[in-house]
Amino acid sequence: MPILIPEVPPPARRRLLGALLVAGAWPGATLAQFRVEISGVGATQLPIAVPRFREEDKTGQSIAGIVRADLERSGTFRIVDSTGDVDETSRPDYSQWRRRGADALVGGSAARLADGRFDVRYKLWDVVKGSDLGGQALAVVSSDLRLAAHRIADAVYEKLTGDKGVFSTRIAYVTKVANRYTLRITDADGEGGQVALNSTQPIISPAWSPDGRSLAYVSFESGKAVVWSQDVGTGNRRAIANFTGSNSAPAWSPDGSTLAVTLSRDGGSQIYLMDREGGNVRRITNSSAIDTEPVFTADGKSIYFVSDRGGSPQIYRVASNGGPADRVTFSGSYNISPALSPDGRTLAYVNRNGSEFKVMTMDIAGGSVQTVSDTVDDESPSFAPNGKLIIYATRAQGRDVLMTTTLDGRIRTRLLSSGVDVREPVWGPFGR
Amino acid sequence: MNTLRITLMAATVAAAALAAGCSSPVKLNDGAPVTDAKPTPVGPGAGAGGAQGSGTSQSGVTTVDLSKNQGADASALGRVVYFDFDSYVVRDEFRPLIDGYAKVLTTAKTKKMVVEGHTDERGGREYNLALGQRRAEAVAKSLALLGVTSGQVEAVSFGEERPANEGHDEAAWAKNRRAELKDR
Image (cartoon, each protein chain N blue to C red):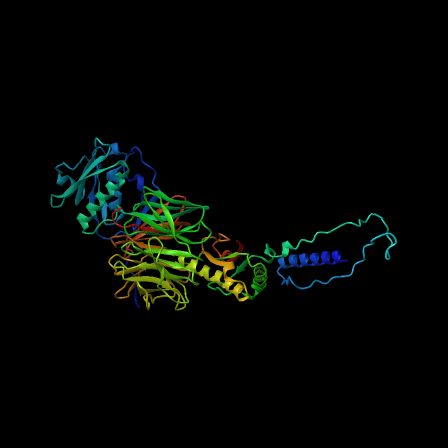
C-alpha cells in the first residue's frame, strides 16, 4: 500500500497566549490554562478584522478576543489590525479596512438586559465586495458569554468557508498531577475548564454520549476497571459495567441507546453490547484473542475495533450485531485506537513503528494511508464533529500535551497546559 | 519430648521460609529433620543429666504458632510474577511462587485473592489493559491447574496505569511488566 506523505510547507511557528491576545485587561479574566501554538499554516488564509465589541468590558469577557482567537486557531484566517470602533449598526468605511488588508470585518456589541442576561450582537461584512453578510443577536446568561463568542466565531467561519465551525463544542480529557486524576471538560479552545470527576485512582477512556449530556469512562476507584456513565450537568453517575475482571473501552452508538464495551468476564478481552443503563448484555466478538477499543460507524451499522487475532493488534470491522470481522489496516504490524470521521470516509488511528507511535489517517474506500503527526508518542485520536480536525494526545518537551490537526496534517495546534499532564482527549458533539 | 519436637519443626519451617525469601525453592510440607535433644529432667532423681532444680523451669511451655505459615500470609514467597516484553508466559522461575499460593488456596477454600496484571508504559492504554488482563489470567490459570477453584481468584488489570517504577527505560519497564497477587 503506498503511503502518501503530504508536502508540509516550512512551519511558521507562532505562539499565541490565549488570554493575552486581547490588548488590555478586562475584569474577571482568568489566566489561560492552555498555550496554543500553530505550526504549518496553509498558503491561503482569509484576512479578517474583529474590533472589540462595544461595551464588552462590562461583560467580563473579551468577546472579540475569543472570536479572533477561534478564527486564527483554525489556521484558515489571519487577523489584521483590528483597532477601531465598530458595532453591528455601523456603516463601515470599506476603503479603510481594505487598506488594512482585511477581506472581511466583524463588528458587535454587548448590553446588559434588565433580567441580568447579556444581549450580544454582531454583524459580518464582506469588505472586498462592500456588502453586509448578516448578523445575529444572542441573549445569554453571564456564564454563557464565552459560548456566545464561540457561536459568533462559528457563524462567521461557516459563512466565509462553507464548513460548520466547532468553536462552540467541548472537549473532555484526563489530567494527572502526582496521584490525582481529573476528568475535565473545556471549550474546544481549552478555556473554561470544569472538573467532572476528581479521583486518586486512574481514569481512562472517556466517551461523550451523542447528545453531549453524558460521559462514559473507566474508573479504577474500586480497585479494578469499571465503566461508569455520568450526567455532565448534574454529576449523577452510575456504574454500568462492573462484571468479574476488567470492564473498559466504552463507545456509544449514534442514537445513544447502546454502548459497546470490552469485558473480561468470560475470559480474555472481548466486545459486548449493552443498553445505556448496563442491561441486555450480549457478546459480539468471539475470539481467543484480545478484541477491544470498539467504535460505532456514524450510521450505527458497523463497529470498528482492535484485535490481535492475527498475531499483532490491527483494526477490524464487524456488523453491529456480530458476525465475521474484516481486517481494515494492513500497513505496519501494530495499529490501534480507531476513530471514525462523521462522514464515514476517514479512519484515524495510531500506528507503532519501532518505538514510534504516530497518528495516521486512512481513506477507508481506497485504503491509502497518510501520516499527520510529527511527534513520536501519540495516542487517542478523536474527530471534531465537523470532520475537519482531529485531536490527540502526545508527548512534547517531557510533558503530555494535546494537539489538534487538520486531516492532512498541514495545520497543527498544540494545546500546552501549564504544569499538568493531559491525556485521552475526546471531542464532544455539536449542540451542548 | 513432643514439645521439643514441634518447636524444632517450627524453627526449621520458619528458617526455610526465610530462605525462600532469598529465592531458593521451598517445599512447605516437607518433613523437617528432627534431631534428638537431651530429655528435660522431670523430677528429682530422674535419669540423665542430674541437674536438679538448678534454674531450669519444669513448667515452661513454648507456643507454636502454625497460623503464620498456614496460608493467611504467604508473602515470604514473594507476590509478584514478572513477564518478558509482549509476553504473558509465566516463566519457570515463578513456578515455586505459583505452587506456594496454590497450596495456600487449596488448603483454605474460603480464602480469596486477586491477581492484578500490569504492563509497561509503551503502547495504547486500552490494548495494554487487555495485555495486563492476559497476564493476570495466565497466573490465575496456573493456579486453577493446580486445583484452586476459580471463585477464589479474580484476575483484573491495571494496564499501564499503575507502574511500580515511573522511569522510562528498560530497567523500569521490566519492573512494570508484572502480575501481583493480593489477599482479598
